[in-house]
Length: 212
Image (cartoon, rainbow, N blue to C red):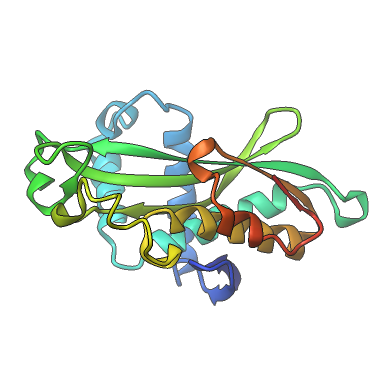
């Protein structure tokens, strides 16, 4: 039983994928694909049986995003030095990327990006990195699909509560890092660009081991 961090940084329990054999299979596929990051699944798997097995794994209802992150989080914890050798300082690098699927069949189910005809979603990641620059893993990942009526109305949203804005993703990820700092006895330095220059985010800091 491992824990994940929810949208406001609180912890809740999860049993990962709920099946030890499925978790073992998932880890095996992950190791195989990680060794060939520039390859597609068919390119990485020479046998049709392996290709089909990988897609079936992803189609399994038990392989949820939360379960996958729980397994990944377990790997992050196991890679950290023993608690007696802490405090350890890590960087939490947060940023948003646009995923443009305008030319794909799924575009009609997605939202606008910078322009109404450009369809896709926004993916926000928090990557943990050691002081030496070595990636430790993905602490949190969230996505947002913008509604058509919200495009180009940033001025109207100026006085809305932060929880109702897209900017809330910065607070959610900051809270996640803060909880990670407290539970693991680590110093965490939150790194972001000026889009995260939000008063509510600075006011959110309460853990002594959390820094900007």
